Amino acid sequence: MAALHFQVHLSHHPSSLLRNRPRFNYQPLRIANNSTRSLNTETPKDHVPAPGTSLPSDPPPPPPADWEDNPNYNIEKFSQLPHTDFGVNQHILIDTEFKESLRQVLWNFRAPIRYAFAYGSGVFPQSKPSVTPSSATSIHSKPPPAVVRAQGGNPKMIDFVFGVSYTQHWHSLNLHQHRHHYSALGSLGSGAVSAVQDNWGAGVYFNPYVTVNGTLIKYGVVNLDTLCTDLSEWSTLYIAGRLQKPVKILRDDPRVRLANQVNLISALRTALLLLPPSFTEAELYATITNISYMGDPRMAFPTEDKSKVANIVGNNLPHFRRLYLPLIDNLPNVDFDDAKCSNPDWASDPSANVRLTQDMSPTKRGNMVRRLPKAFRSKLYFQYQKKYQIPQLEFNKMLEASSDETSTKINRREGGGFEQRIASEPPENLRGEVSGVIKSTIGWPSTSQSIKGLLTSGLGRSWRYMGEKIGKYQAGKLNAAASEKRE
Image (cartoon, rainbow, N blue to C red; front, side):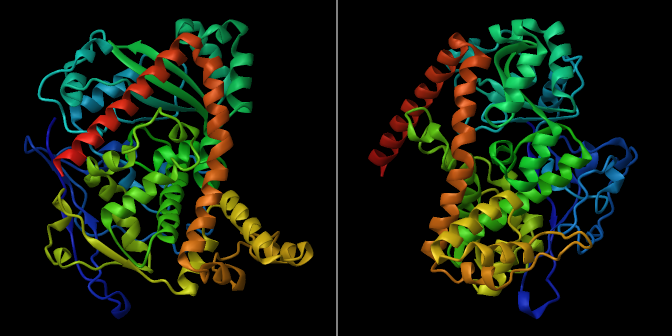
């Protein structure tokens, strides 16, 4: 796989309150073959520089101050985003030929796919490549050479999610073209398939163990409205949790990009509420990654490697850095506090694990509580209503005062007395309440989605999937035991 290197431009923040705070302005990335590709090459055509040119080195203009307070989720064009480079951090760069192999998968579907990403260990390895190919090389029937190189000696099924506009219409077209992708449920027609997708679980329909272009894949189908609601409000955290980790976006959509930027900054704020005053970069990304696994029933059974979070972060730290550095830089209550940051090229070092500090004042943390996603925030408020024994009438007035909008105006989302009281809780108490809300948000949708898999995948493929998960769990236990012996 071609090596990728960050070029990050650093300068000091002008504010004395944020002393020595680095500013991160992404420059064109240098690929190992000496070609230069701008970070914008993966966005729609109206954002791509002309051939032979790159984006200017000047920092992009800051987004409007109220973009997060009043996001317009009805946009239809990338030009309607808050600024030209908005959300470019979401586009993780991988080997060009591997990326094209993943994109070729999409062209095998005649049903229209508006948004698509590939994710998981088949795209972003969670362990070092094997020196020799494993016995599982037959998992792909005849994969493109780029897939073989990217996965090294550890071939894995590649996971995709497709965002579509009209669920039943999409499945109608796909059933006509790819009936063999579906279980027996497909024989009942697109109406039954779309009803199961939209009304059960987290609103996603998975077809696993499908071979496309000689590559074994699993793809999930989700309605764009369901996707954007989960990203912006955290209604289930099912897809939002996946997009909080590095993924490879293969087909972009302006509305999803806007909602996902809200999702990423919400994940960052939530992690800060769970972390102590000082922490490392790896601890921050591990906390973000763990959000989507809290409450997931698979983590309670021997079907997931217990070191999964550490493996994801440890092997993909540069990708996490690309996702979150611009967002860290724009938050006023968190700062880098490490001598390594004095080196202008520290962000290019994949081995760097710098330390950060955050402002623990009730005002700043109260503002973070107020800016949590709508559905998630409401659950947290109800937790504290019970804890503080606030009368319902008084609580309703508080909710009305803290609503995002009224019939006449959009409210600026700043923490008031209730949010500051929550933020003043002892850190361990606040962590417990926030963790509890995460678990309750994820628990039932994830459980029901797993049960739904028995119907949508069929018993044979479900049994195969469970067997592979148990195998990974056992391998993780063996690796952990071997690591303890070496220590």
